[in-house]
Amino acid sequence: MQKFQLLLRCLKLWARKRGIHCHLVGFFAGIHLAVLGAYVCRRHPNATANTLLCRFFEIFSHWPWPLPVSLHDQTPLWSPDGCSLMPIVMPCYPPEFCASNVTKSTFNKIKEELWRGLSLTKDTSSVDVDWNWIFAPFPYAAKYKHFLRIVLSAPTTEELRDWVGWVKSRFRGLILKLESLNIGCDPNPSEQVDHTIGEPNAVFLWGLIMYSNTQICTTSLKKDFMRSVTNNIYGKEKCAHSDIELSVVGMPQVPKSMSDHSAYLQKLPNLPPRMLGYPPMRQGCNAVG
Image 1: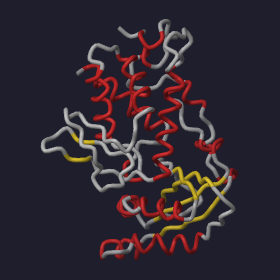
Image 2: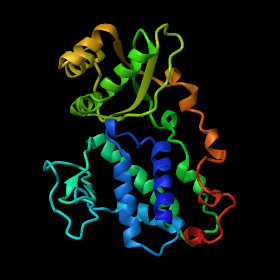
Image 3: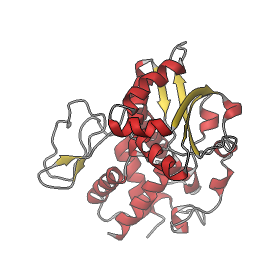
Image 4: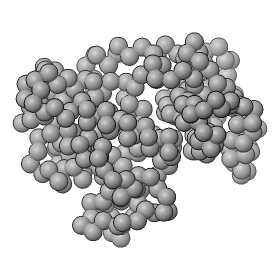
């Protein structure tokens, strides 16, 4: 149990740092990581903590999705809706699937991060393994040239909190709309604040991947998205007092906090130093006893 808890803490930190820990925008929720971590622990009950993390990347970078991941002895060979990209079965009886908002864009991002983790941990004989790189913040500013800037504002902080929660619950529809326009999207879950705006606000910056010369009409995009936001009385009431703005921006409009990643070199909290490369490991994945 102790090794599972440590592995889960590592997985959550990894997912947060790499921008793939937010269920509402199509990434992992805590339950997803818990099941995946438990699957690894069950397959390798005598492994050390470091080895478990290595095996996590090894197993799931090669996983034959959409084959469901299950802790049950008999794994169902079907997905909950017939089209789920990453079906994960909850450890309950009768078996139920974890809710999932994964889209094509977020599925590709998760797979890239799993392969990155594998590339950093597969050489178990190396004496220079630096676990800091696994937990390095995702370099959005270096990865993307264009971003979808989403600004949510409201008259008060309390109203903003409700507004942000409501709009985020509709973000998946916006991602799917972008994908229908042949535009890949990396929905960064982190929130920024624009201090030049008088009202309380929250700003989201999503990396855009243009697969063609598609031009984004933000007016049309907002109109389509607002139909989802205001599709019931609650949404219409919130929208009457709050606002949302969409725009496509480039690097100059990206906050410094998204482009300066030197902070990851500092000691990360809540994990034993040996899991983060302090001091450098000497025996690869088997360094933790």
